[in-house]
Image (cartoon, rainbow, N blue to C red; front, side, top):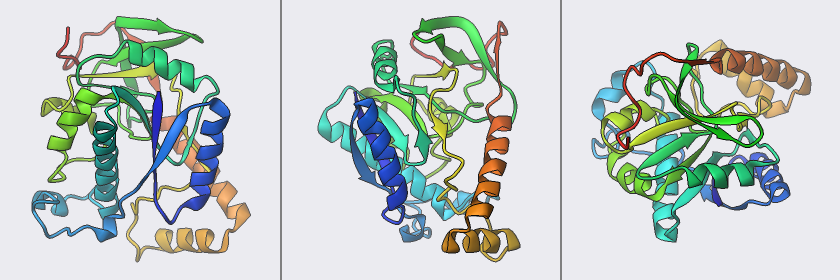
Length: 266
């Protein structure tokens, strides 16, 4: 199993930390240069769907993230690999990730994505239907609603999915972790998740996506904290991020019917 790790040139400390983890675990990896949203031509309809510019959630950094993952898919196709682990650079990894990834990949086929990290504003319900037991008391499961689990921090993707995603991302129309959108477009045939969540985002690292209005008080405070490396404030912000993520990673295993079955392969 090969890992592709997205890293922005302005984040060398993240690069060092994630590389140390992968070396310890024994996973072959390479870094893929992330795309800065500020470098994209947002006025070009061939790059960005103009309708997105009017949405409340759109930020150039989100588009940059989408094009960063596009680079990974293109690299996977050029390398002719059947499956790969895709990671963003702000993650913490379990020691058995190499074995877990290989076992999960053995259950994948077609254009499929398996999320090792996922977030949802509501409790994310996972179905017992089609559940596959994995080592270390983990489970490979389907989400009841394919539109619920998000996050592009850590996932395994097949070559077939990469082929279709390359054709679907441009022009940028949705968040890069909107797997329901890509499922609806036919870019992926199946979405599954690993429980418990195996890859976690490191709360010590703030997002490199600019979610806040740069003129806001919040953005100015964060800028000062980062610029002067205020350790005490960093710890407070890390605690806050961890608390927020706990609320976004609530999961329930249920027997409910699928809202939209997240697979075309069964």
